[in-house]
Length: 440
Image (cartoon, rainbow, N blue to C red; front, side):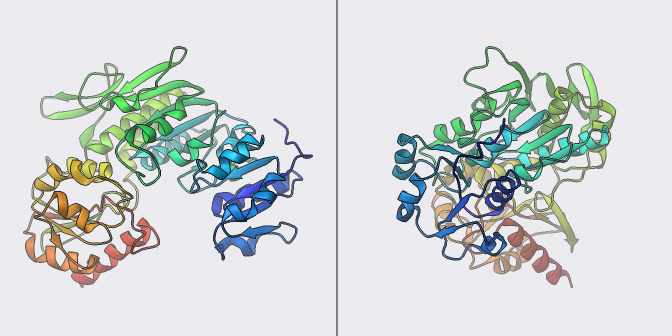
């Protein structure tokens, strides 16, 4: 689809995807107007001189916004405000960068969303494509903005898509798409869990193959009359499932044994589900089974996602800082449920409006819990036995005195990190540094 050069474009939000959008529009011969609610957006210095930047609350610039035809909005900004309602009523096109990508992509696309596991599955599918000899571009919510993926002669795109991105995406044609799971997250943005679920399920709008988690009904598309439906499951027979043969668990595709779970380099039962989903998506794209299986043998998982740091005095230290919601922490605890030794948990941070009631039974299965951060009291309300500490350092010091040889200390916060850190990666690196200091 050709860009309407005669139209006037605005880019709202000057984060990494916003800057990539500006650069993409400039390459098309379009000079957009940029808006950012912050007084000092970090990337402002990278804007070319000919691009105008308006800084401050968007309502202050309603007349400037009304003078534009198309508004490309950063995923971090909700488009449900009264201002955006007025802009829509005035006939303005409102979209995200993924929608712009959808109108100009030139190869098949696989889309992956879910409350947890989407970065792991996106990375796996990307590596499987490379191992199959396919020229692939991987991006989206995983880090590289989608518009930076265009123009590299890709034969396949693999996109991690957040619910925020999907809100402003309407025409993305997908070869295959999955909602891996749905658990409470971003409740400070959505009306309720159903509202959040519906945002996730938008990924199925125009896809050929819908990959559904048979263990989570919330991942099922509302309407799929003309689409192929495939299922994966840890708990029941499905298109992709887990089979126990004597004392060995196997990942299965129909009746075909793919790989023994003991051969996976990734740890945790939740990664069995991630592996199944990745193979299913790879099958939909025609990737080589042998290449995909080899990737599963060698892929050790992501940094900050159930990442083994070290063992000290017989205690294993595990960094799961990327667990920024309740479902992710439950998945981590489930993953260690059948392993020897007890789990001591570190949790807390910015709960994003979550109700921690669902987490309480899993906290009760641990040997002990240390909590800190902005919403530590919310966790304590559902699990009074939790030990309150002031920060991560105190949590590690306390649990190191409690854990016995053979146990593990797991940082899996069930919360975002923004109350104390720039992001989950900074929190995870601090955990690593503190643990290494403890061991030295």
